[in-house]
Length: 553
Ligand code: HEM
Figure 1 (cartoon, rainbow, N blue to C red):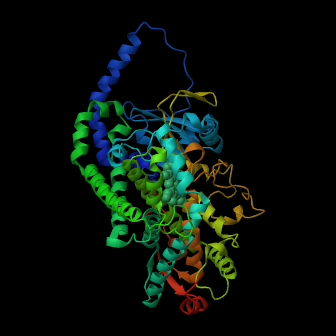
Figure 2 (figure 1 turned 60 degrees about the horizontal axis):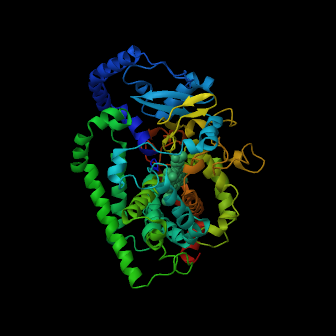
């Protein structure tokens, strides 16, 4: 979600805390907090009450007063957390406790520890930390991704997994996906004709955004530039969620200042962004209601009417059954944009980057895709993909080395819980370092290398999948909070990747060597490459010809 909300508020706040402004703020806070700390210590030590039995906490590096371990977390937290875990957490079996500001954080860095947290004790760790920003943006965090564990969240999950993300429903968008892919291929052909380069990062982001827009609001989503407006609003949300948030580190102090913060939230950019989202979603929902009352839509879930049966139609038709309000519908829709756009587009961008860095793998994938698409066919279709056994391993290997949400979304413990002999107190935030787990040399052969073959039949990871059962590979999470949009995301990615390599040959801009493709990451809502991927598309003679001759797929 955030980070998908695709990587969540947590990731951004970790990042924000390392900025000079945030550090200055923390230092300013240090003096009064230090005072409170000493007062509370004196109070505790002066008390004559018997001390409770000492709990065994997971191992921790030495901490500083007030800021705890914040200074140890760099601007790419997934990397610094892996280094810290190797040094201090290995005795804890992949569990390490950090104090970020005043807040305890359990860092999970091994497949075994991930299984303990997301399977054995999943019920205890399935909540989310509170966030005033998400409260203000997402109708009191009444969406899915930020919602605390409880009946409301369960109802929404049930709704989306039963009605929006079933294999059948995702399949019903196949022609829509094909059409969106075709539009992108047409644009790339224009670039070929004009001997221009293609900004893959931008093109994939637009495609993923348009695909979510179309699924959410139907085929007229381009009307009045709504897709562009959604993109702009997603960017605003990302920026707001990634901003510094005192509550993440000093919830007590944030609560004490809550009336001040409430008026700040009411007048600031968060409120303005919320208003803009609300107005746009309200207009689109009203359009749908108008169409529904004129009863010119197909039945929800009916394949013939599938283009009309978009997410909004479905939500309007079932909301009473699930007891959800109009605001809840809007919050769910915001999640779809936040969680579904950046994640899918990053996988596409990084798959292309890895294939360009490994030309022999690009040639292998191209050969497979081209051989298994019927001769003369303009584009690869979803049906053709079933005959392409190398395509899925390429996507899996991209997800392994470059999980879009490397720390998943933050979880929160709801009760005191014993994990592997350690006590994890209620209210502990949980960071699952999927990035470290899926590069763990104990689980992966040549862990740092891009080797899709490992996922092929006979490969060392042939049986490993991403559906939350193999804890060395959890790019979508696992357990109760696993990504519900997994099938939607994979379908969006695979059809586009197949067509990119089917319709075109790709080169690097003149003078650039494959070793110069910059894979440096920037940590944010999701983890982005620092530099945009710019490539030069070249026509494939036969396909270019076939594209002009055939207009059907
Ligand atoms: C390749 C694409 C995607 C990846 C890698 C991905 C990854 C993730 C991850 C890591 C989480 C957090 C899991 C956790 O907390 O343990 C998540 C949650 C979520 N994802 Fe995705 N996601 C993808 C695509 C999508 C799409 C396309 C949608 C919807 C259109 C979506 C909707 C959600 C929602 C609503 C949640 C929150 C679930 C909850 O808190 O219960 N995701 N996703």
